[in-house]
Amino acid sequence: MSSALVLAAVPIVLAAGLLALMKVPTNLQLTVTGSALVIEPQGLDRLWTRRDRVEVPLTAVASIRIAPRSEAPPLPERRNPLHLPGIITAGAHGRTFWDVRRGDQLLIIQCHSSAEFGALVLQFANPFATLTRTRTVLAPHPHRSAA
Figure (tube, rainbow, N blue to C red):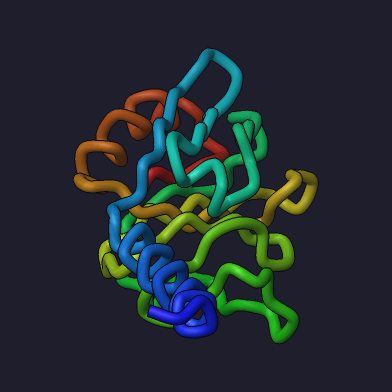
């Protein structure tokens, strides 16, 4: 095989590998501390989101809910480079932090205007279990809703 053919194939193989890696489900860890929600992308999600951690003070959380993708905050016109419709949306897009693949049931955390992000749109293997875990911390606070 000629070296020109090999060189021409390299970008195609790299692109195919990248697309295959993006099909891997999100790998997020959500921890609730006494004062904050801590979202830590794991593995390749650190690369996709360009973040090691997002910390949202509990006082900044307005609501947390599960919603279909159609109810997620709209993406701004000028998007982060990591947005391939229907495949992956990850990282900060305007004031919204995303880590979503193909899933439709998303955990949406709305924040007050003083927070770093206005909303976080996250995909978990079991968003209902994640919501239940966070609801126990959010429920005692009357200025937030965990619906």
